[in-house]
Image: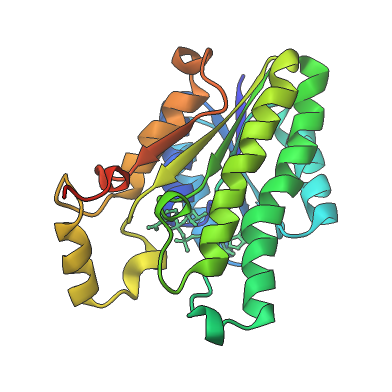
Length: 247
Ligand SMILES: NC(=O)c1ccc[n+]([C@@H]2O[C@H](COP(=O)([O-])OP(=O)(O)OC[C@H]3O[C@@H](n4cnc5c(N)ncnc54)[C@H](OP(=O)(O)O)[C@@H]3O)[C@@H](O)[C@H]2O)c1
């Protein structure tokens, strides 16, 4: 039996990862912080594929709640093989209007949340000398974006953090990689005006926004046997956006 944990799995990319991992044969620990109804629906989708799913409420920005989360996952589902560090938020605004509170909250959830969950998960994986850590960053960690200084900093921080983990944990048989999605159609990007979405689409070589399933396939690859020799890497899933414009 193989167990994975997906943080922020109540909708969007986290839900798609849960479903894709279930399809690949994993039992899924579904983490969420508030959206219980969404998390129940994710669990139902996993179970409909014949895999076990359990719900775990917990705010990843809390070190203690993250410790309890990993403890509960292992108690209820068994040894954790894969953790997908997906929970994330935005609180956008130009730097001059960005409050300290909005800076802190985005860094706390997106970057400290990755440290919190990765730390407790790695501790459990080190004992068994195997495991996969997959963190969801963003294309804007590589390109920057107006109005997202806090978000870009958190997502760029994830890349440095995971590369350090890849080096530290390789001797324990644990790999650590990053998936960097481009613009994906979820609640997070739903509020963007149509004009912005049209301009964005024009800037994407593959000519469309991404789907949560596009990201989930990459995550499933990094969780599977075929990626055993890959660690410390950043895999953009962005329709070619991070290649930059032709001049
Ligand atoms: N959509 C995009 O275009 C895009 C692009 C690049 C990267 N990403 C990244 O991909 C990840 C998922 O994004 P998404 O578009 O699927 O976003 P979403 O639809 O807004 O979903 C975010 C998920 O994170 C959970 N979450 C938020 N704060 C949490 C916390 N403190 N503790 C635990 N869970 C928490 C939410 O659950 P609750 O509501 O229960 O809190 C929800 O399940 C994020 O890290 C995001 O930055 C998204």
